Length: 389
Ligand code: ARG
Image (cartoon, rainbow, N blue to C red; front, top):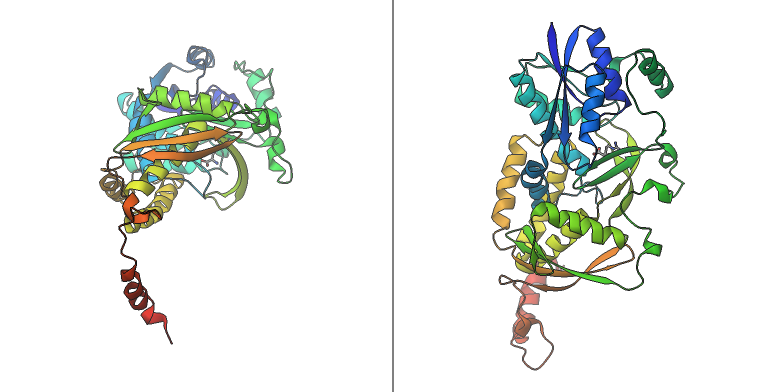
């Protein structure tokens, strides 16, 4: 009998997928990836076993996610279409990596996932699986099965005695991990509708956030955030803390219509307080320590890097080469940025770095000015010369 490793979330789709795969002659092994989504994994494991899985792997991948995915994206300044900090997209290559790993361990011929045929995640998972082991068969039940609606799926689940949780009919599709939350579907499909407050899970409505600002100082070492307000934290607890403080101040919400890989535009809202604060602070520090040409060139790299993540091309030669560039830019990215968090905004207000390129004696308008203004005349003439008719 053939074996399949299924990326299992505990939701309706993947729960039905267990039975569906079994009905097609597969032995089903479930894999649950812990990327910090904060769910009851024991309960999910029980559901998988009760639903017919032969074995369940639960893997805590949070440290690897932080070190090998989130940090590189932060250092690169990767933001898709100017707004999306890529939490969901960053998790997919890691999940795919372990699907392949477990398939090898289990000597399974196939892997499966519960993504729809309209989204980006199917692409990210399958491209990565194909890169890591092109011989594995990939099954995407949701893309091919006969159910036409959620109701039909629920009927199937009930008739097959699949344990599912249909009591709370979720109004949104939500994907969550350490780096942020992605929320779509339901009322959000109406572009003219402001997202209702109940769509947000970890950020306060900015108008209800505290009336006085909160100041925080983030200290980076070679591009890696290490301290908050002078206190050292592990990356995981630092992100947890910033999610909490930022969320209370209403920081980190975005609402955008994005271009999916499969050619459609979709509306999605995101919550990522820590990621937002860290990106803003990191960029501010780079502005202080990188020279102009390097800083400007890096913006182009950031755009490309964000596309590589969004497009599922994490394990590609180009992405690896970009990592090389980014690494060489981070050597001097050490210092502290103080931000003012206030009713949804996070604004840098003070900065310091041993590698700062700001020279007060050159920029000052005060009497300690050392800038030789006479030289400006010649500079301007030569600079503008090619443009004179
Ligand atoms: N649009 C985001 C992406 O492609 C998130 C997709 C998943 N969203 C969700 N609510 N399940 O990366």
